[in-house]
Image (cartoon, rainbow, N blue to C red; front, side, top):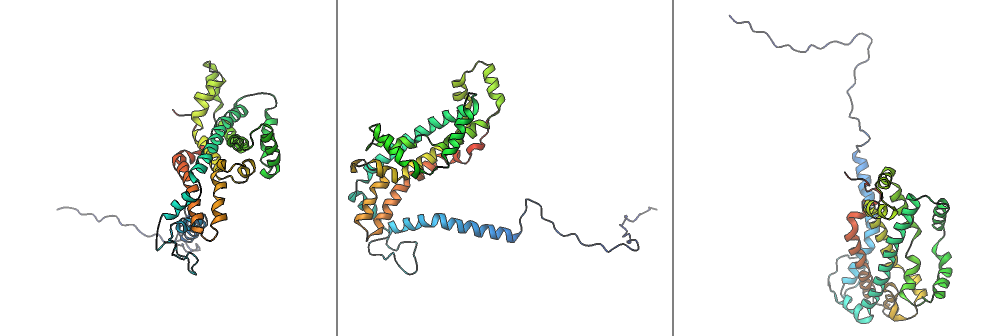
Length: 306
């Protein structure tokens, strides 16, 4: 004879008299969770910002690809061309020496990028890692220059370039932008984030200032150097007012200045102007695509790697 026992069943304990009835627990959202409404609002805002930033570029690209017989002033804008063609890009090259202008712009951009990478890195390292008299004063002067707009100093810059005999030269175009105050402050902040113990250990090992800069500082701020390179290249490539003031010889015009011939000669054909704009935009895309993996690291790149 076997004895079978019933499984133990939970017994509901009644609430004590006078206690309020229990309520069902509602799902609570933490700090890292979003409701459906918040997600929808965020995506709507992202799409709106995307249309504002990418929309003009897509419209210019579409205009440059539309055929001569296609109306671009329709009541309902059409983004996709019905008669796509690349003839307008060839027409730009036949109308103006666009490749010569692009070469001039590239030379100016290379000088500006090289000057900012070398000059801002040296100045930023000196201001952040070296101790000398007047360091805070120099840093304050760099901060003060950010307040002044470029139009305030453009006359003095032109007088200086002319006195040096660099007027109507590509080097004269590149000289004022070869060291930017903002880039110096970016490098200052990047070098300042490095641990002080790293420098102290290098000094104990007998490293001098140059060795600390080359072997410790520069490898740790590659992300910020990429940011400086991209900003300097875009600023030099897209600059219009300063090259227009300095240069008087049409053979030395940069691309942004030379493209104005399209606007003056073919005012009734915006397809050529759109094609020239796309030609000027392509190098910026190439530079950003090359350095974008370092760009997003920026100043937060780790200084010490095990």
